[in-house]
Image (cartoon, rainbow over all chains, first blue to last red; front, side):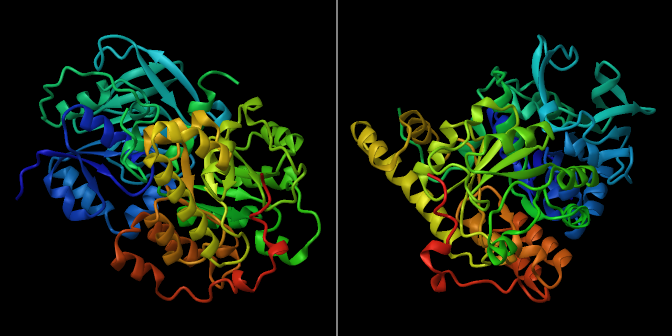
Length: 219
Length: 293
């Protein structure tokens, strides 16, 4: 059995580069996961934002879902952002659950249309020292947390971030904001020590560095 | 427009990366597309192949039909407005579609000006055949670009041509001395500040999908390997023999575009593709990619 000492980002669809870039900023070289055998070396995996119906379709077609669940049972931690949080939920309002790894109920696309997407600046004391920016894009809401799940951030009538012993769920996108706090928090949850002092990276176009046509002009 | 609205809109496009956006004409097709793993649907009355066949003026779809599709699926719903028809765009914004495609597939309403997209809160995607066209649309406020290809043909050759042209333009621009940038911008009609962004980034400063003629899983993987961030499939799915299987197969091939074994498996037993029209046999005036300026 290989040691679980790496962090992976599920690379099927969605905001993959963004998570990879944030992890690299913390000094971690993540694994972009497309195949089931890659689960074996992972201490943790991030299920990125994207479209949950697309992600679940691909996880099922390529038979990644059962192996992801098996790796999770073997100790691989999971962080679901936005669509990823929908995938790991025990219950989805108006739909059947998918991976069912965390006792939360999630309402998909709970704010409405793209016109209702928004930013907020809030404190998440357990994760970051000061207030951090959060980005909600056609976001879901966590409307119930079960036994063994602690809310990390409550806003109005819903939970925006929660964690259990083995899972982290955020309905917003820390990978789209400068703060590295959530990525550091997840890495440490996976038992990976972060030594870098850097806690912020510019993000407006950061992912593009990983999706270039050509090396850019040096300034 | 609020300060962060453009950023939120560009970020929605980021979340669509690696995905397939499918043209649909009714709620049933929208559900098939969603079930197959589409990351968004484009709601329109007729797919480009039918617009081409029927002729006449192609306009924004009936808002009632778009609303039915919005009610049927949880994935983002996009809809098309005519080039320069800012009132159609206002209607689509009032309808709260998730993205407006200012599209050459519809008959242009203005043969000089595109819509001022900065006047809207809803995001826009626009077509482009080269870097100049893409950069002008971005400067007008587009939060996402798609290469145009030639819609409704099932022939991928124009999509390839436009993607290759875009990549070549970017490579040339990035290879220039700073002093050479302004004349390059002048010749190619590129807003200077967008050119500077492209030089810093080594790519377009927004998400770029491929479109126009993609009909098979191999076509989708081809466009992804050429460097686009995702694909639009229009007539290619619902004009084929078995739309649900073809839709699933194109989603698979887009996600695993670098894995020939998976693309091969996705390509098996899909039935008849759309019949298609060869671009080389088409008259110049029948091409719609030349609409937009």
